[in-house]
Amino acid sequence: MPGFEAFGELEKKQVQDVLDNGVLMRYGFDGMRNGHWKAKELEEAVANRMQTSFCHTVSSGTAALTVALASAGIGAGDEVIMPTFTFVASFESIIALGAVPILVDVDDTLTLKPEAVEKAIGPKTKVVMPVHMCGSMANLEALKSICKKHNLLLLEDACQAIGGSYNGKPLGSIGDLGCFSFDFVKTVTCGEGGAVITNNQDFYENAHMYSDHGHDHIGNDRGGEAHPFLGYNFRISELNAAVGCAQVNRLDEFVGIQKRNYTILREALSKIEGITFRRVPEGGEENHSFLNFFLPSEELAREAHKNLGQAGVDACFYWYDNNWHYYRKWEHLIQKVALGKLPEAVLDQLPDYSKSDFSESDHWVGRNISCLIKLGWPEEEVRERAKTMFTTLSKITK
Ligand SMILES: *Cc1c(COP(=O)(O)O)cnc(C)c1O
Image (tube, rainbow, N blue to C red; front, side, top):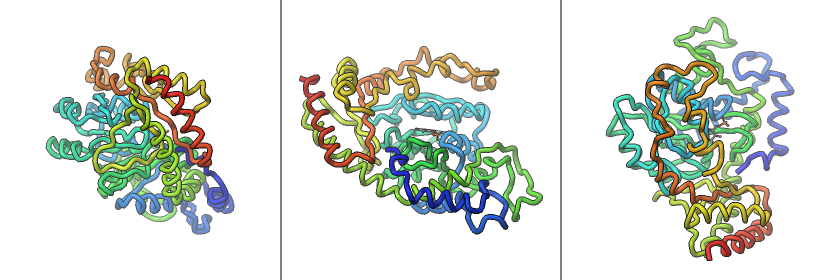
């Protein structure tokens, strides 16, 4: 998945443009920039590739989620439904706005289970946030109709899924809002960066103002701008955006290499009885950044993870025991620990997750192994890897 594997001349050339004129900021300094507006250029490229009317880039994927929620008017006490399996950024962005993350189960897609979403909807629910973990999606048709029925917003966290699609549409472009991360380990990288995409002009206007202190960005060279509402600073720098300008044009090349490598590994593993694969909903196409499969039991999954590591197959994850990606290890959220006092609404409304029953999530995530697909592997190396994985996993499932 990592775009950093492909960092090279194209990225350097883009960064050099910025260094040559010295304008590292995305707004203002119109006379000095020599026509270089890297953040704007990146936004146009992303909106174009994602077939949305608008894109606003920010300093990280976490910032993108926060800005997306804020742009839709989400604030204190509003509830956002999100999965038990995701990166911690999902609930961080919600809590940052004083809103409340409501965790629900994932199914064999490893992302939101639509029936569990519907059950969790209450009078304060405003948003459903599916997270396209490891490059694949939930049943978005089902989630869309639930959102329509209950008048909720659909916000796609597509931070790990750039380049994937659903019913022919790019992931991220299907909900009311979509978010990408361009951090150092994502498919497309800026070093640090993120983007919000939408077809809703109000959300877009709110997003660019909110992420720059509420400045309205009317007029040239930043003179006398008004502040229609309170904002914050989530700006991306021109240096970071420049890297993204080179990378985003290579997205289809990256996804193509990932698909080749993924397919070789999957074909080898599909010959092993006892191994099943993550379900991709009908109409979905992964971005092939990870290969996800299930072992028959939690015990065997742990053994598989250990043995793969010992056999030298790196970059395979057992998320169930991982500190960052699964609710079981989010002790700070479960115990409601912040540096200062949390907003009242969060303290009052946040469920006691130490008592929650997420046995369905445990059932799937507890048996899952997730292998990162790299761009830099020559085909020969992928075939060797496939052989080693086949041998190692065949022994376990016998
Ligand atoms: C990486 C990631 C984020 C956060 O992105 P950053 O750019 O690292 O802030 C959010 N959600 C998911 C699912 C991610 O993988």
